[in-house]
Amino acid sequence: MDAKTFALFRDLVYERSGISLGEGKETLVSARLGKRMRALGIKSHREYLEYALAHEADGEVVYLLNAISTNFTSFFRESAHFDMLRALLSQWLATGQQRLRLWCAASSTGEEPYTLAMLVREAIGSRPVDARILATDISTRVLEVAVRGEYDAERLQPVPLSLRTRYFDDFEAEGETRYRARETLKQLLVFRRLNLSTPPFPMSGPFDAVFCRNVMIYFDQAVRARLVGEIVRLLKPGGYLFVGHSESLTGVSAGLCAVQPSVYAKPE
Image (cartoon, rainbow, N blue to C red; front, side, top):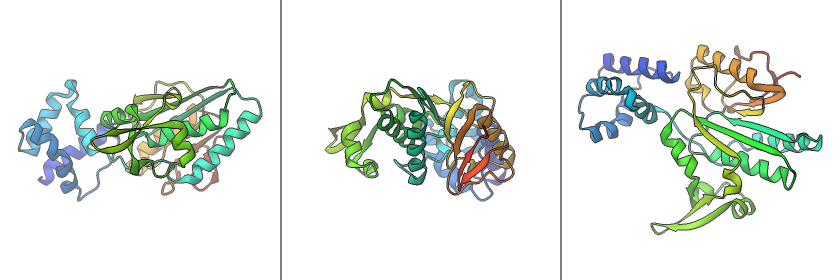
């Protein structure tokens, strides 16, 4: 991929998703677009770019973003956050709170929102609590995986056996054991496509907690500032924002108070 074509891809990806592709990423972009180009019979990167723009109404730019976006995740990733959420859920429910709203802003293939759903189910037990978890991502490809809620045994390894037994059914597929999330988890979850770089967002909140982890590292300061400002608007007073352990809100905190590394609270 020549430098001029890469610059055009980089501008398009930033404009449509807020993802900043750094210098020297030509090989990465070329590799990730290769499968789609082969499927379409297109050999030139410039030709594919023109094709994507010409067929944007048919979703081709979404296909492009699906290929470019990074989607690493796992169950109970950065587990200290889930320990803290578990304590917060107990605290909120102990005070008689009967409505819970959580938002997983970069849900990827679903491991994070299903982790949240397990914690919520464990916390509420038989209480008559109105609980919902919104899970969003820009990639339609990973959202399709998340909606299915099916994972191989290796992906389920971080899930304690007691939770795995309670919330997943095992089944055989192509000679291997796989696991499917039960309806008791799926009933809590709503999956939607959302571009985090283009607030304001359609939901009204307020959210008790927002998990926006390991996604802002792909945004520049301007996009981060807009996103955090919108999260603050949607958080309830006293609500919490969890970001990735490698992320910080330096310069974009929008009035949030640091509670511990990578956890922030909206003042009451």
